[in-house]
Length: 206
Image (cartoon, rainbow, N blue to C red; front, side, top):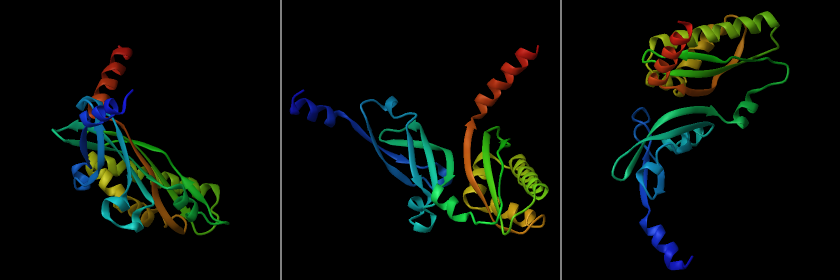
């Protein structure tokens, strides 16, 4: 292929400015090129909370967005994942203490299905019954949070640290804790997907 052909192909591509969802302030996430608008749909963009807020102290929180809609030269995204970096999680672990994890799948008030993975770090080594009690407390509070919140509100509570703080304040009465974090949050299904699954389930049962 000649240099002229390559140059022409590059010039024909349109560049789209990628924006974060409204709940993240419509901050610019970068740009992405495409020959056709449809090619942009479904692309994922990874960034950190620190980049969004211009705060290096938040760089231990990774965020992933997926492009769901296209304007004339703008790509709009939705939140699909929040995750703490491995280095940060490793820095929280102390010898002689317990790390208590849980995996909770919940449905928000507007029918988004989300998986949330909390982790609690104790000050000293807890026994099995204490670890189980902490785990049950985390699961219960996350389920209650989802029952009272829309998807956007739940994600905001996770990213801003309010949910982990609430869990910490309750679970520390079971056994002394050093920290509670939400280590990962993943959007598993949209409302229409949840409704379709429910319809399929009913058909099978009938």
